Length: 489
Image (cartoon, rainbow, N blue to C red; front, top):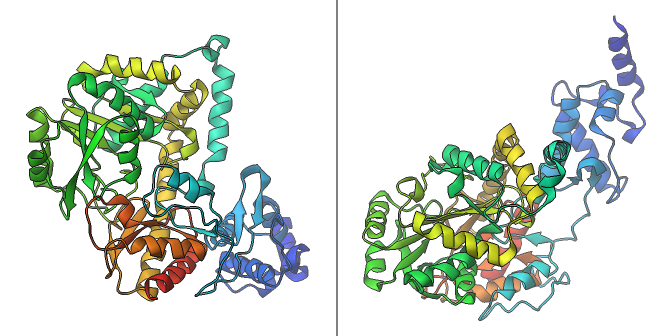
């Protein structure tokens, strides 16, 4: 027997200090499950308190005499269950224990300052700052999965190579190397054939809409049709910049183009790949009708907000892939990496580009250079694609957990748009607008959600828009259980 085999044998006999783990107690196979179960037991019994740092995976693997993969898989299972939190270089620590779930009437200190009725843009700030233990609001990605190590590697490489002059003012349209990386990314993932000089880097989709609201009136466009239901935030952003909006109905095939033509609006804001909030895909016939409408002079603003996140269906090519004429295309990295980066892109028809770049210069002189260079390296190295594949798997598990919880606790709910994205929508029987009271009651119980009526202009069945990307399966199950009590009262 060689020395390493002897050491492993000794460890399995004598155990180790951490939780007095002993491989002799482990079943054949399933070491990761055994390790995760022992740590969960220690957390439940109070032996491991919130904030306690677990041993580094390499150290614990060496102590146990197992491969590092056994430990990392065990830690991953614990993180998925909400028992631990990975904090990069700070290590893996025991997560704060959620307070007990009380099915009825339990207050958890939620801030009752959210104006659920007649909301304005400030409602999102108020909801984000409200105290709640379970966040099921849509549009929030899994921030714990941010690729910190890959980001730091790329940022160090950028700083090592960057000459001093690179720290000066950049082009307002964006750093050329990042614009080229975005063009390549859009070609690979969205089927869009765009040159680097067509890409304008913006501070997220919100700024893209602000820029278009400044530019389009000079081209005779002062009214934009919006989907109904559709993003309340996008609609209010346009209106905040002086643009008039009118609702156009969305059905199971997406935007009703015939209704758009009848409305007479010169432009339309659409989410064709994964309509917000219903999740429907713009049907083939509707796509052709919309492209024909654009070819006849209509302006399409395509918000491709989360198209890379799909699970149970084939990818949908962007409208912009069909033509660059009369289509303004915008997207961002907010749902793939983090909203705090404030990085997105805008592609516009040739006759608008100079005005768009001028508007961007007037607003902020251009996005910060270092994040653009770091992101370019992440894209070119393949790190961003690897990250996307990883979070797709995680998001699928969380989506599955939400659907299963709904079937268990609220089988009468109708689920919509679960095949892609970071959220799904449910509808249920009840008077229109009653979902506002449900969302208010849910926040009182410590669960954040959006009422579907926030995103409607016309009436319709009540419902909830539920995000799952930022919560663990255990949190999702608990949140749906609480929500079921609010709709069954």
